[in-house]
View 1 (cartoon, one colour):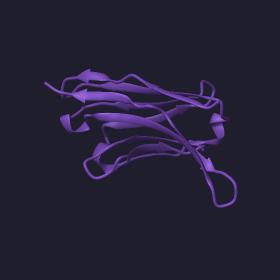
View 2: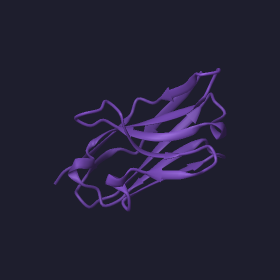
View 3: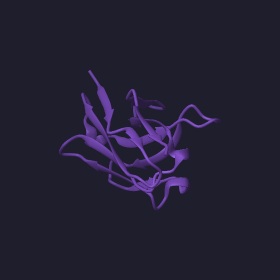
View 4: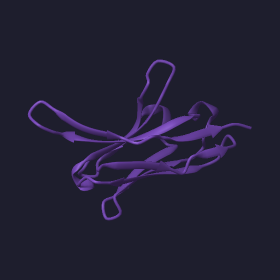
Length: 120
């Protein structure tokens, strides 16, 4: 049974920091690409950051310089360090594990999300 559980969310003032954690079990974590998503007014899930199974990471321009994504394959954990938070970062952040599956297919698993609220 695949389990993906996010934690670390909360309420923080603008300029503050949070560290999100995604704990994964039931799959070979090291083989999966991992990503963080959050909803926007236009998309149910909008990519925030990802790190490939080879450890190559990237973040979207809106969070570049503020957010850092990383993974620990020994602990089966994905992290998102969020600094200099802004009110517009307020969202429920979800963790996604994915890789190519059967020919033409995709294996993709999602967590329930963790709420981040940035407010003064």
